[in-house]
Length: 222
Image 1 (spheres, rainbow, N blue to C red):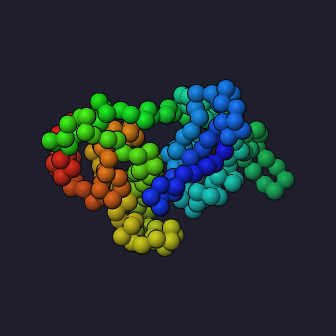
Image 2: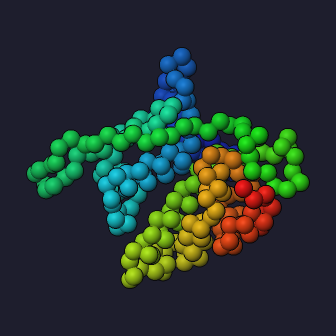
């Protein structure tokens, strides 16, 4: 697949498009023709980090350039080809591994399955945009990773993470707060079942109690 993007209302949305489709050969495009870039990239990076047990000192661009050779997007999975592990400047350890990561493309319309705010009729509800959903899922994963780092390393704090990531302390704290979202809300975010408007900004800094999170969002408890 090839990278592409669309511009709507001044916002850039990144995608990966079937190369056959770009070449005007729709009959060879297969069943997966377009996927949101942020969602795929977040899943690939998280899966490779977990497989190789990489430390936080390896940033995402370095991870991609050093450890990933190829990613194939199939209807039910991502096939990730890893580079051979470099033991020394002259020696590598075996052939690169192949990761099979379960994945499926969320249908564009899933109105019947949306978590609906109270008072909103199903026919009037709209799901989050794919880019909003992908950004939220990636932020939740990042928040969980940073929280795990704080727990595992007593010398680490939000300030040190902010310095490393080149962002504000407030952004670090707000992102980490996503790690405390109710499991059903996280599942709905991954499955694309959150209604329009429930992205990172809306879900940051929620109350600790899961029931109160639903109340704050105007949703019925699961």
